[in-house]
Length: 180
Image 1 (cartoon, one colour):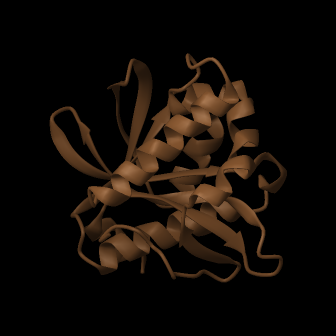
Image 2 (spheres, one colour):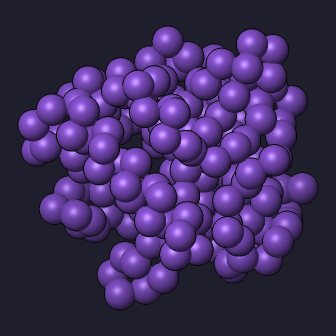
Image 3 (tube, one colour):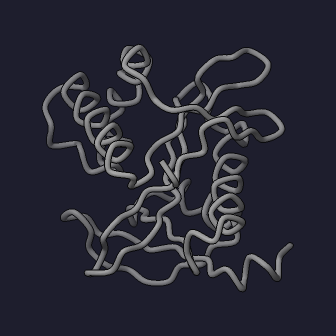
């Protein structure tokens, strides 16, 4: 599982793979219809069905070596605060590596998104996974745009992805190296 950050750490976070025992914790995320809209699963009827689909997609990515979400654990409490990871995506007929994340509602606005996405960026470039990284962000998701900008990414273009208007934020390895 080349693109996962299992066992990696930041100052406040530990990364591990998702497992079946985590299911009930994630239901809360899929109860938030705005988050579901940003994730493109808002048309699925129930939070449980949305969560089930997300788990299936994550395990499929792990199995097919396409990256996937890493569970983020607070080092102090060992509590799950969200997920973040590198995901291989095909967008506009091109393979890209996306930095993707979601933070559980009670842990937002604490800097976990910024901290975990920076770790993903550094991990990907240090391991020479790609010459650039993207984040696919719904055009209405202002908070995620702030996280991407904070992570040194720029708005590269607006396009459609999975029937959603999205902004593609990007950072190239050369830009990353200059910021080090």
